[in-house]
Length: 60
Image (cartoon, rainbow, N blue to C red):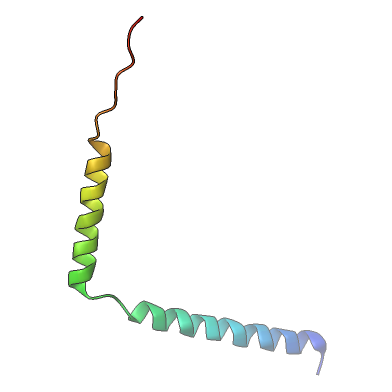
């Protein structure tokens, strides 16, 4: 068997294994309640950061 052919087979097998791992990881999702709480917590933190008053520079 040629070296290039064997390397192509190994590469294809590696890609198939990566695709299977990705498919399995995508199938496992956190509970909706946890995702919802995390989402609203991030919104709250973002609003706090956006609404923080900044000191205005003094006019000289």
